Length: 235
Ligand code: MN
Image (cartoon, rainbow, N blue to C red):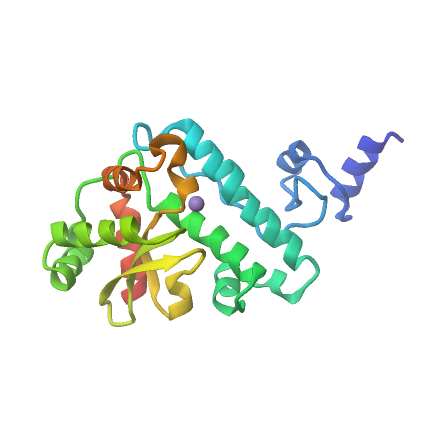
């Protein structure tokens, strides 16, 4: 039997074997495309085509950010937790439980980026209505004041990190500027919206001009998703 035939046969009977990425697609097995071990954590598909966020983000910008940076956090994380109890947790639970260090950094960056992609939509922009719109007006005065404050948090954050809108258990909204992989999940708060302000998030399209990236971000916010997160945080 040739090697490839053996691999396919083995996967059908459930043996943990090396598979290429194409075979993963055809069998649906949860197996790493590289390395061959079963993957504890899988990068979710991008919720839209790579070029769907133009002109806010070019296809090249998204291809590098999603396909290189975000993918690497999943790959690193899977390598770090292989065969360890952490591999049995949900990604969210792992982010909450992991002590400071490489596992937390890669788990949180994996989770944060998936959340970031969900916060964006080619049909996004505008202002939220409903309970979220009311909470923003209550906690920040107006949508314009909220937007200015969150933009400011992202633009002024020194070094790499994320600007967050998060809710506490009473539904009160807070803006946080958190460095590196830090996330509201670690602070007992529920993430509602985020802006990735690591340079890799915007450097291809905006070079050093983070403020321009943050300004353009608002035209693509998926308020439907953000409102769902707020509802989940308060429900
Ligand atoms: Mn990023």
